[in-house]
Length: 103
Image (tube, rainbow, N blue to C red; front, side, top):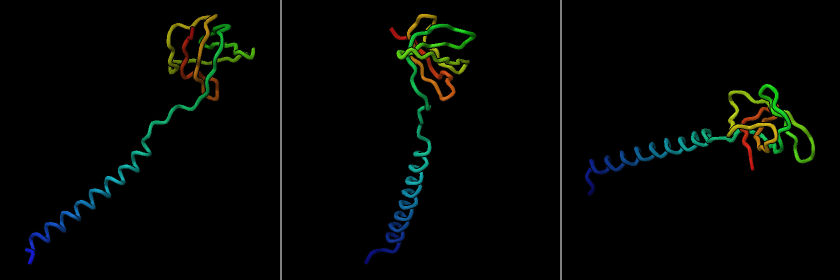
């Protein structure tokens, strides 16, 4: 016959294991909510036609000119001047989230 303390010990371990696994499973659900999301935006490519008070006017390949607004939150990679070819990630309001010159 099995000793009662062993049975109680095994059952206790089983209960603790189940509680631990349920907490781990709920932690996985919380981690799904914490996933890093990429900022929404689209890419603008073209040549800088002019720079006006922190706004960049870019002429795209199709000839269309687009004004990109910048501020302190814009990640500028390098010094960008008139005549530079650039790639910018912009939001729906044409605010540049990042901008860099390309060769």
